[in-house]
Amino acid sequence: MHLGKYRLTNHMEIINFSNTNSIINQYMAEMRDKEYQKNRLLFRNNIMRIGEFEAFEISKTFHYESQDIITPLGSALVNVPKDEIVLATIFRAGLPFHTGFLNVFDHAENAFVSAYREYTDKAHHQVGIHVEYLATPSIEGKNLIIVDPMLATGGSMELSYQALLTKGTPKRIHVACVIATPDGIDHIKKIFPEENTTIWCAAIDPGMNEFKYIVPGFGDAGDLCYGEKI
Image (spheres, rainbow, N blue to C red):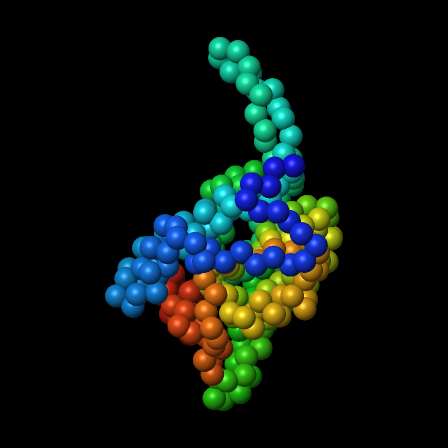
């Protein structure tokens, strides 16, 4: 088994890429900047590129096996991953993030969940999460990677996970996001199995405002990618 720099343990790990210097910080700087945010193409591309980098790092945790590959001039022994992967995406902000992961894990199966926030009070301070659509293969015994740019309260991640569990029990779970909050991480720790779940994020911001948006964050990821909704 090839684990690279990550040694999986029996407790839930949180990998925060902002703790180390990498090009991800440049993408984050642009995504947070309200002037850069006027360019939706750049914003989507940065979400996608962070997905690609996180996918590469997650690939270091897989099980690998040697294969003898025939080339035009001979043969080469290559270590390739043998784990089955299901990439699960939460509409709609998750789409460019999912694309980044799929660019790396091009053999992965894919799952899609529609989960969106509904304010349950007139002041828009209380948020409920509604799930109305699920399309997924079996996740039984597979590596489940749930990708969603924003891990705020953790509510949509929880409901999406519960919906996916109707299609099997995964061998290992990776929760991948761009920005997380301590509250969201704590919620994942309560809901997901501690012994085989890892959280990956480009940054952890201190909290949320009264509308449950991450602060300082960068705003509504779906709106910034695709335009405002009504």
